[in-house]
Length: 220
Length: 220
Image: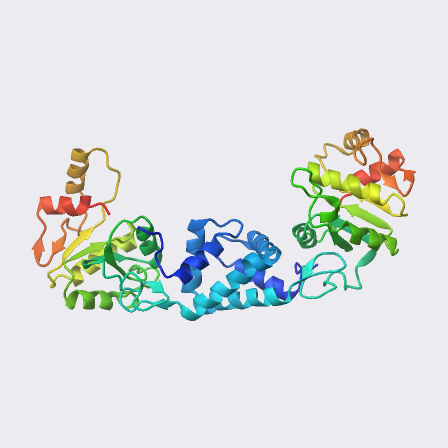
């Protein structure tokens, strides 16, 4: 017996819903039924919202965020600090930082992280846009809010190398568990955080121990 | 700081997605991002499938199933046994039975179960349609595949009472854990399964112990 219960239109809806993250075939059926039951209050508005999203959502040409305008809401917000750039891997990271109210700076979305295994090279990321923003001037600090994964850290090292020639202060998010202030600072100072050989570049200058501590303990 | 990260169109999409069963605000954001990222391969087809569903999905006037045709695919399938009706609470139950390939009979969807607490009375269920189908003749057996909840069982008793005057055999799904065949049959026979006073009505006749066993052990 075929598993097709209803007409092909409902089956297609279920199949598409099952491709959403977090939904399997079973929960997709539940969602489809829920939508069909709430046709006027949920299905119709959702269909309309998806149509609008499909037609109007753009990728911001400045930072890589998604929005219905270009430049996006954040890039065109004059009250934001345009001298600091927070570099994130994905739009999801940007949203998370915004929801947390973590910073009033502007963002730059890379669109991924360097990964030899997945075949993601520098040309696949929005790095040229980042260098261009720094080269245009006006950016004095860059916070690398990449993930604490091998890929994220590789990307961070790559960006630090890329920006060696520009007078921009590069800092990174603190990570790890803070035991107490003094011992934590000591262990941060000992750990090679900035580059493989244990320092962060700021322009052509190496960071002093104190500066490195400040960078490492920076908390967004 | 407002939690609005992107434009109002994306926020609206996230809010609508968060109303789907199984998705919360956080996973709705993840789904929205996934949709925006896969605009061509997922967002566009899903928007189209929802539009089609909104325009074309009907409730079957015979059985209460949802489909894009009326009568629905199952009701208009001539190969199905039209003498047996499986009575279910919801379309979800019908889909589950169909996916399991449980029966080649036809269905009748009640659209809920009697519940004094939720204010669901007989007039809220598709009971008149059920009686009409039986009254029109051609139905010799009815399997009450309602849930093993207080509401489901109340509904079952109500239907049994309603159909007392019609020459139709009413059976129910077996439930409970089968320990071994003989002891299980004995415990089923002892338990008051059919009606509060321990019998199933078939027409005006009470079931004998053997018939009741058969009805209780019927496995879809």
